[in-house]
Image: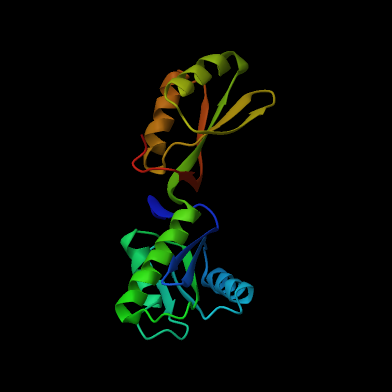
Length: 214
């Protein structure tokens, strides 16, 4: 699993007008090619009266899946520029559709490339780029007498937390960055003076607005 990657937070849409043609950029996070295809088809259905619905998507840890479509525009003037925007922004697991309603003025190849580039940029911005950072659960089981001290230590470290379970003991779920999980677990052992039961759990991605983390 990647230590971190950049994608978008949500579905986003934004429109620009260039020489009377409307270019509507749509972007959405996707995890599979099937999701990307369904998204593109849904935009085509929504904008079935549009002149073109050009698209591109990139999926996979190593960008294994890369597809683009000019949807009737001259070859290389629409799908490729959209895909290049995705690459240039370092995004993964994303699908982008730029819808065009022709306004009656020809743009030429260079104009089309710029227009579809700008449409993709607008759609991605509306979808809000974010980072998915790999964290790992560290479960800390302690007696109630340790709860206050451990919470204070975690708060001072600004540790990201999951759920806390209260049974005959307290079990805290901490979420350090995956690469730091073992070091964190050792620190927790020191904090609890060996009285806590520390266990590594699952790895999971957590959304952050920036990377590296502040």
